[in-house]
Structures are given as structure tokens and as C-alpha cells.
Length: 340
Image 1 (cartoon, rainbow, N blue to C red):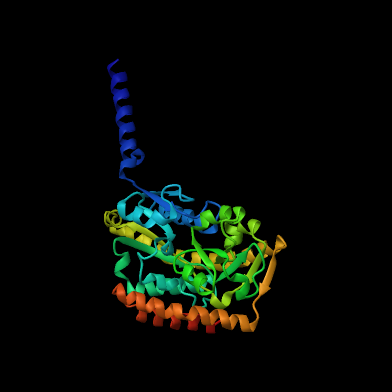
Image 2 (image 1 turned 60 degrees about the horizontal axis):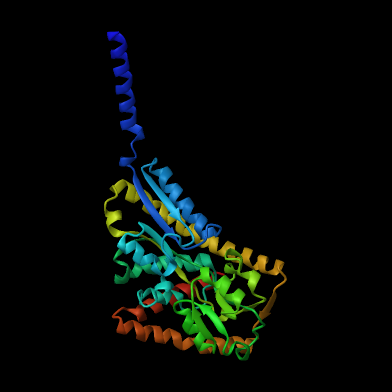
């Protein structure tokens, strides 16, 4: 009987040892990740893959749970949610918190980005170069940016006359682009745009063409105007709560930073690929495409040109070096465009 009891105690001790070595989740880092993109969107899928890659390379020491579609924090509240700790990590657009990022608003200017891969590379280069004070309340992981925007609408837009007075969904600095062209901007996130177009709350949307597939908006528009002459981008952030980042072991921080560099390339290429897929998708639905005449392109470009100087003047009031930022941006875009 004594030997049976001793055997039982040995088994229990061994079980406790195994539990302590591998079954205790208290030693693991658990993080929440708020993503405003819907789960079907390629950028959300990349967020999930990023989280999985971190889990794999840290050998399970870091577990990141992704909450897509704004289910944890809505797009406009995502950044502040990271600051406050409502989520440990967040992904949304700088433009959804207009006025909060006076320098980085410059990334969204209509400067003629050639494609999403270039826009993403340029955005990261400038964030690294200027490291603005406006993002110091979180730990920036990386940024990414879509390809040049186009105008998708319920009815044909072939000229400025067609655009005058139309209600156009836009965000951040792009609302000023719509105003400059004579439209009436209505600010809302991409997640709200489908229903707004469907119900006639807006007549058109200013967006990258990938959006028409990624957010299914091609179903509720009839026409696409090739307005790349006033092409802009929207820059998206992936950022982490500063305190949560500081508490991570240095080796885990290094692993994440290494993965971040890889994912910048993945996001940029995904935007370019998505634009190609989006265009094919819209054409498959037999939607009409309209190319602006040379004269119209010149008119549109001239009308938005003052917005660049307005950005510089506005940045002075916010005491940020918007003039230097714009010069660097234009140099980067010119270099990217010349290689196309």
C-alpha cells in the first residue's frame, strides 16, 4: 500500500512539473490587435499573418489575437485606443483622426504616387526620416499606403462640370481635394461607404480602385473616372501601446522589428496587386470607365495644386516642418515615378 501511495505521489509531482514547464500560459505575452479592415480584405489577412509569424518566431511566447472589422475599436478611435490600452496594437488610417497628425497628413497629398508598393516604401522612409512628435505616444511598428486614388460614382463623371455639387465620400486631407474640384465631401470610413453609396447618402467615393473589390463597393457604383492626375494615397499605421512594448523582452522586440521590415514589403506589394485585381473585378461587373481628356487633367491638377502650399502653411501653425516634409515627399515620388 505504501509503495502505491509513493508511486501516486511521484506521478502527481511529474504532472505538476510538466504543467509548470509547458502548460502555464502566465509566462506568455497575450496581445490584442484592433484592425479596421474587414476579415476578407487582404490587408487584414496580412495582419493575421503578421501576428502568426510573431507567434511562430517567438516559439509561442507571444500570442496576438486579431479583432477585424473595427470590432474592438472603430477606425477613428483606433489610434487613441492604442494610447489608452483599449487594444495593445492597432491598425487604421492617419486620416481618420484628422488634425491629430499634422505632419503625416502630408503623406495623403495628391502628388501622383505611381503605385501602392512605391507609396508604402515612401511613407515608411519619411516616417523614419522625420520621426514626428505626433506619433511618440505609441510605438510605431510600420506604415503602409495604397495606390493612387480614383473616382467611383453612381453616374458618369467626365469633367469638372459633372462633379460640381456631387456628394463624395472622402477622408482626411482628401476632403479638401473634393472641395477643390467643386464636389461636396462627406467624411466617413470605408466601412460605412457601401451602405452610403447604396442608399444615395453619397453620389461617389474617392478611393483606390482596389477598394471597389476589397470592400465590395463595385456592387453599388456604376462608373469609374480615371483621375490619377490628382492621385493621392491614404497612409495606414500599425502601432503598439508604448508601455506594452517597453515590457517586452529585448529579443522579442528585435524579432518583431525584423518581421515589421518584411511586412512593409508584403503590404506594399499587396496594395499594387489588389489594384490590378480590383480593376479586373470592376470590369467583370461591366461598369463603365472614363478617361479624362488632357485638358480636363490639366484643369484638375491646377485646382488641387494650392493644397500642397496650404499643407505647408497649416503645418507652420502646428509647429511642424511641413515644408521640409513636402520637399522630401516630392523628391521620393519623382524618383519612384521615373523608374516606372
